[in-house]
Length: 294
Ligand SMILES: [Zn+2]
Image (cartoon, rainbow, N blue to C red):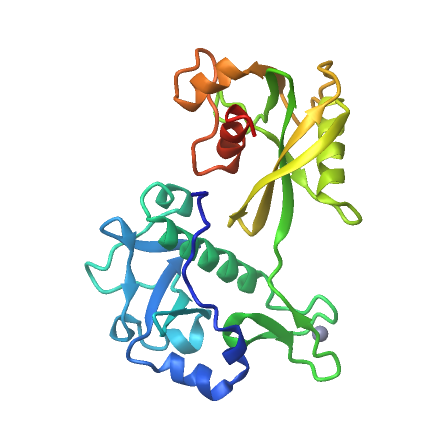
């Protein structure tokens, strides 16, 4: 399972237009709330810590960002930004989502990722990009709308597509090191897909820009929502037409071809002088797909 996928929430899209229904969800005795502080979800005992209505500090519903994530088993689940407020004792701790990824079961991790992306997007879109006026949350948080009548522009949570790719040539694949990586780590090349590009075109452009290598066939392998803040990683394998490298030193501090044996060892944490991203990252799964002959 690719991390941040496998969520089981019903987003209840069709019912969100009904204001009375939304109000009922907000006052349901079955409602459960995932609190976030500074975008960190609340965890307890290795899982998400769902707060009951009576756990929520007074006024929080009126003063804090609350988003209806959807329904689980018919019961409403909200995300609520409680940054800076104290909680009843024993309800758990706020944990950075990257650290939580190693703790949470897949469906809860997917939900926490959804909550983080949405809360972050709402916090950054309080003003209209068209007229500069204030915006208000609509349909339980599925989008926002400018409250200036003459404008009334609607704004939808954005997802930024990123191509992440492993260029391969025979028995070798290409990985690079960004300066911000921990020492010794190499990973697949990646970059935002730009306006006017297909996924395949973005893959070819990125590999040319970062490595100076022309690429032929590009094949989609898998994708991953990446909630930092809200990307969609689109993983591909790409057939390089040569192995000669012209690295872009602005983007990467090192670029290397690795053999299948080296990658096999690295996936078990046993390579001699480098390591690869852990299973939370789609790069790990791209390497596995290539090793498996994908
Ligand atoms: Zn506006």
